[in-house]
Every structure is written in C-alpha cells, then in structure tokens.
Length: 487
Image (cartoon, rainbow, N blue to C red; front, side):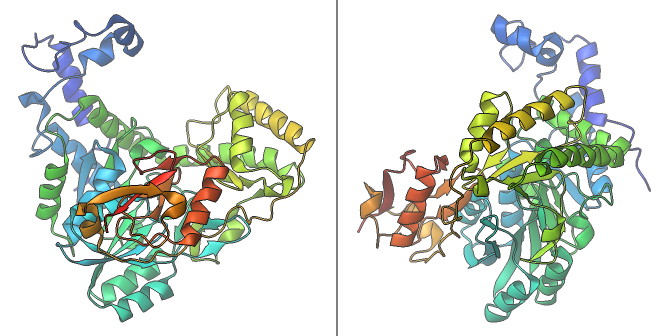
C-alpha cells in the first residue's frame, strides 16, 4: 500500500511540540534559546532554537522508532525502493560504517576499490574486516581514477571466493557511475552482497536525464549523502537496506550502536523535509539542476584549451553512466593547477567543491539557476577570461599521476593497535604505516594502517603537497612526519 508522500511526520510532530509551548525542564541547556549566546541565537532565529529539542515521547526515539521518526524513515524507504531506511545524523560516514558492519562479520573479506572514501577504512577497522583491494580504471586525460569493471570484480571473486561483500563508490566525485547492474549480478552469483557508497547520488532515479539509482540497479545497501546534493542540512544522510541478503534487524542494531543517544532533531527534520521535496518535485529538481549545469558548461566551453568531462566518458574506464550536474573542467592545457584556478575563483566570490592537480569541479544542484545565477556565471567567465589571457606552460599531467598501488604488510586493525613512532616522511620508505593519509577532497587514502611506505608513495605525497592539496588523516597535518609501526 502506497504511503502518503505529501506528509512530513517528523517535522509536523516538532512543529506541534513547539506550538504547545511546553516549558523545558530538560536538555538542551539553552532552554529553547533562553540561555543561548545572543549573537548565535539571533543568527539562527527564534524558530530554529525553539525547535532544537530533546528526546520527548511525542518526538519518538531514533533507536527504536515507532512514531514520527519511524514513519519518516518508512516514507524514505518507499520513495527510494528499499526495505528499510535509517536516518544518519553523523553523515554518510556513519551509514558506510553501518553497511560494512551489517554485511560482514569480524574477520570477513570485503572487495574494495582503492579509490573508496577514507570512511571505508574506518568501517573496516571497526568491524575488524579484511580488505581486498582492486585498482580502479584511470583516465589519463583528466588524471583521475574512474570505476572498476564487472570483469575485474568477477576475477577478484573467482580468485578469492571467501569475499563476503563487494563495495563500490558510484557515482564517484566526478559524476561517473559504475556498471552496477553487471557488478551486482557478478557479486550475487558468488554469494557476495553489493554495498554502494552513493554519497553523490541521492538525486538519482528521479529523472531520465540522470543515471539510474543504485537501488534500481540491484544493490543490497547504499549510503546517500542527502546533505550533499539535495535539501537536508550538513551531516545528514540515509542508509537504504534491502532484506533479501542482509539482516534488517542487524542493520537496525548496528545503526543504533553507531548513533548518538542525543540526535539533533533539526537534522532529522531536514531529512524528512528533503524526502518530501523529492517526492513532491524530484523530477523538476533534477531537470533544474541539469539545466543550470548545462548553462555553466556553455560558459566554460566557450574557451579554447579548456577540456570538460562530459558524457563521452561513458563506455570506457568502467563508466556506465554520467551525472551532468558535476561540471569538471581541466585547466592543465592552460598551465594551471586546479588549486590555482580555485583560488582565483574564490577571490572573485565563487567557491568550488573540489580541486586536484589538473581540474576544478563545480557541484551544481537544483538550488542553482535562480535570480543570482546569471551574475555568478558572468563572474566565472571574467575569471577564466583573465586566466586565458595569462596562460602558462601546459601541464603534461605528470603532476597528477595515478595513485601508487598499496602493499599490505599487516592487517589494518593490527597496525592500528600497534605501538607507533613518528619519523620524517622522507625517511619512511620500508616502514609500515600506522595511520591514514589522504588528500581531501576527495578523501581517497594514499596510505592506510598496515601498508608499506614506498619511495613511490613518498614522491606522490610530496607532489600533492607541492600542489597545495590539503592533507587529511595524519597526526602531523603538514605531513612532514608520518607515524609508522614501532619496530
């Protein structure tokens, strides 16, 4: 029976509680804004601080949802086509951890593309799982990792039949989707489940202009960053699970284990509202985002020497579909790094989602294309016009090599729990890494605990540092030193 997608049960319950003007002899301590610092309270507004409420009977319990939270999650599951939806208020990182811990018991093996987000390593460590890494395809023209192919997955599963789960990131940061249908078929044929980090795909499946959703392609679970692309607040995500091959009760237990006992109801309500938006006008939102992205593409295509990532990438490098709302432009032929161009844009009042050695990525959503969009496109055109008048020696993309292949010397958990010592990065070759090192965004690990530090990895890290790409993970944020396992 179809539920009424025109309702927002959680938001409605919060508004009703606010309307009743109950005096709070309970948390939070600011007591409906009465004790909040005035500057912050003023910026947030009286309505928002009054709705920053605690666990009241009328507002359900996320750990055992039977009321408004349960109803809101059920509506989201029905909208996307899963058996259970869980609201995650600790971002897609929490949802990814929960997927892994639900699907695989301690000691189990998981097939993981090396371009998976750093949060995957956290889930592997928490679950004491053993990763089996697979190298994604590489687009040398743009200097980016793309996707793994179904043939690669089949070969890995044939070689290691003990693998219990296959993990994918689809679409990737650049909007490139894997052949999920073929990979799901390969995984299921060998008794493995398919888990997908769909952080950049909560809007997929609502328009034929965009790739199909992971759930439509047969996955067993997927994690969606509802805050990245659609209308939820930052750190709000959803975990979608199907019960044919995964235990829904275990998924609920794991999510409860990983969820705070004091969830922020404003975050939860924003998930309810974002689902309502998609149910009401998801197709219109998708078409608006694509139209806005296409307008930006037209501006960038007007410049000679700039290369845009387009739908012609489909059919190669494991890419089965492309999300046009991700606008990636290579500035290598103009002699710039993505970081340099992003700095120029930021000085002009435009902030981009991602930069790497050769590219700048503009993330476009249904929130773009409004009254101010023409002015923003004009600013972008001015910036690129000035850059084009001052071109430098073209890059050869040697500045953006493929990530060196990892060499595992110890199990992830074993290395994480080992005694550690800091050594200069330049002197670390041959040592076993004891921490995670990645450059963010996109947050793809260069090193994980238990992996061997090699000269190639040291050179890669120094190159990324010279490009001023921010490092994430190590205790030494400058990466002059790295923690290794004490010998």
